[in-house]
Amino acid sequence: MTDTLKREWFSNIRGDVLSGTVVALALIPEAIAFSIIAGVDPKVGLYASFCIAVIISFLGGRPGMISAATGAMALLMVTLVKEHGLQYLLAASFLCGAFQILAGYLQLGSLMRFVSRSVVTGFVNALAILIFMAQLPELTNVTWHVYAMTAAGLGIIYLFPYLPVVGKALPSPLVCIVVLTAFAMAVGLDIRTVGDMGELPDSLPIFLLPDVPLNLETLMIILPYSLGLAVVGLLESMMTATIVDELTDTTSDRNRECKGQGVANIGASLLGGMAGCAMIGQSVINVKSGGRCRLSTFIAGALLLIMVVFLDELIGQIPMAALVAVMIMVSIGTFSWESIVNLKHHPMSTNIVMLATVAIVVATHNLALGVFVGVLLASLFFANKIGRFMVVKSESADQGTVYKVVGQVFFASAEKFNDSFDFKEAVQHVTIDLSQAHFWDITAVSALDKVVIKFRREGATVDVIGMNEATATVVDKFGVHNKPEEAEKLLSGH
Image 1 (tube, rainbow, N blue to C red):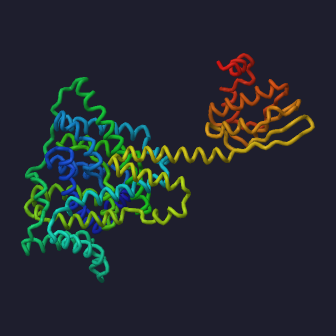
Image 2 (tube, one colour):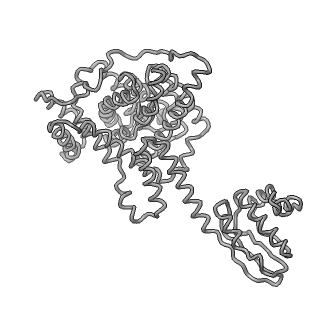
Image 3 (cartoon, rainbow, N blue to C red):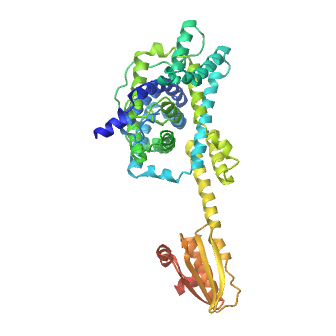
């Protein structure tokens, strides 16, 4: 217990404190922006980010990953807030958390193993593009000072690490924010600041239950939104966990993460905040700034609240250009540039899955839809590929013809299986050798039934040999070629 506590919390104190500070500063404008997207007061997003980050630091399954209010979740809340108001959003966030806890106990986090590498790459690239696109409003119809400040910020971020000693001691994104804020305040630049995005809260959040009627009508209103929030939240969290796993060369407990996200969203709703999930951009900032442990996530959430409540005047002076520079760095660092080079080397099916995931996520801003289409395409391509590896070899024998089936027989290869037999061949006896084959589903068993029955109608006797235990089980359960009455129905089309 003590070793685990030390490893997950206090093995990287300096790096976690500094990275958590950077993340806290970067969370403020994003939480405000996401609140505006959802149509609620800025404090709703800020309280949510504080609460979710702090709770997930204790209960999450991926140390060093940042969870807070996110744009993907905010987009799903717009209609609910517009038609029913904030209190129904809080109730939907509570129910969303309950669904996520249930998902954790049902081990749904383990389903990530069905998401192929090409889908993850497409998801990452799409998020990188969306992060960059989200910065464009801050760079449109502005004075040259904003461009100069943004360029200076990027220069600090990428060049500061090359300085001896100090370059490795301090995270460059934090240096960028501090230097540009001090410069803007000293010179008196008239550029957009964090304070211009919305009024920062001046008090700590208080515990409250959503003020909605506890009846079936309320449930039917919030249920679709809660399910959508739960799915998108878990998808983004699981994807982000995969990316942080790779960046840190460590593993995460995805089912624990599902439960932690659920508790965090319930906690946020009871403190007047909206539902959130893991943030790939902030998580990348945290890791690249040196954050590795749960302490970095805790510092990010706790410091966020302290700064917006007690240091609101100073935080309000941070130029948006500084934070835009940080987020551009995140989008550049998040995008898998290697995937562009790999387009020449990877199979066409892999490229199609990756590009389709990117296109759908960017076009719809719906992460769940993009991942769903990507997984569906990857599954179809995989089934088609495996189906092509099935072959049927025929050879003459003293007693007739022996057909040796090699490979996987299932819905994608069943038609090829049927077409591999010569039913017009005048033979007295047919042997179908399945010792090197595996039958997976009812479609495969049905194909075997049709082959056997067709040969029998041509006057041949048929022996099916060599079935492994799994194949024999499914054939015995669903096959009809050895059941005369059922076989007759199959031939007659009933």
